[in-house]
Length: 183
Image 1 (cartoon, rainbow, N blue to C red):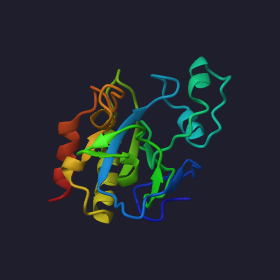
Image 2: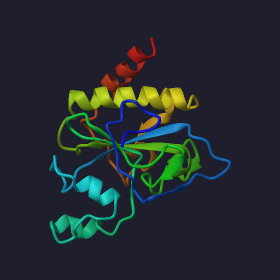
Image 3: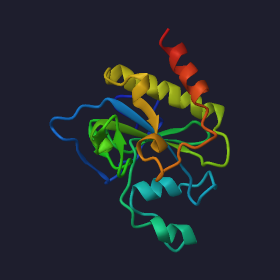
Image 4: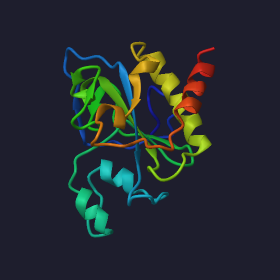
């Protein structure tokens, strides 16, 4: 099933890891993450399994550490540019953890989480940036309170605890995609 709101989404896989946003909260931020399972390995469906609580703990030593986590993101962009949605954007996904943005805590309450398949150790693919740019444009149209300053990395809302999307994320390139889509 495709997303009911976003034409750039290729598939919908429902994660059980979400809940309602607080009644007084509105979406005004996007948090960009990076993930790979196991670390620095790409192409398998392990992230989807993690977000759906069915990652086999005995399949890899690292999985034993994370298989019991209850986490999700609204979207996941694979290295080939394929976009999967896990949680409706009107719902609260569990992606930010302990976090703060502009003196506001509980960042999950007012943000959309986008995971990129990647790590701190390698560049992202051009097709991922293209998919991220298209998705961001769709999200900003739906949620006009999202401004460029409110699109940040996980490292920005959880400094010292998180490093993603990492040193290889090309913020100037991504921002140029956003500027060209707004013309």
